[in-house]
Length: 201
Figure 1 (tube, rainbow, N blue to C red):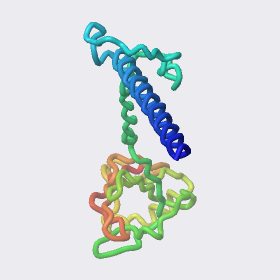
Figure 2 (cartoon, rainbow, N blue to C red):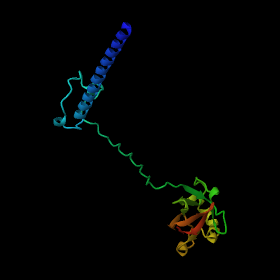
Figure 3 (cartoon, rainbow, N blue to C red):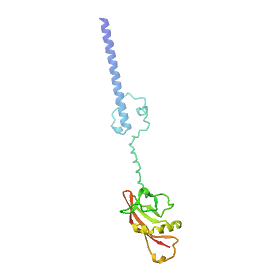
Figure 4 (spheres, one colour):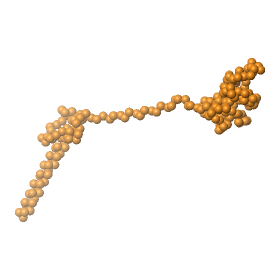
């Protein structure tokens, strides 16, 4: 019987100690909340009631690494720079041909064009994806050969000699382009839209 009373007294004593510890923890938590609110400016200092006698030993903000009491502001991420569209004109190629190899309508087959001017009469300069200008190459070594085929070239409409009467019977030694011709791409053929106008001098 005495043992039971002693055990109850011990239990009551432990319960009382636990209650005191709980009260002390609650007071400490309340104090910490008040200090945090004060440091963040959420409540004025004058409105804070009587503080608990349980004084924390250290600043909780320093304990958790918050050395600067200034609230951290959200920093907007700067927008990524927009890519500037390439405004440089497209660089098209020069092609060369010696014959009109397409008919109805007359023109130059795309696959038959050469990138070398050797032995060629015509220079084709592409100005867009579907347009080009055409001119004659002034090559004295090929002049006689060109004149021998001049009738054929004029007949298909790729070139046209102007001021022929001024040349007379004199044998020409060079070609002067008066006006470049024009071509348009239709499928795989560069169609002649405007003939080259030239003089033999």
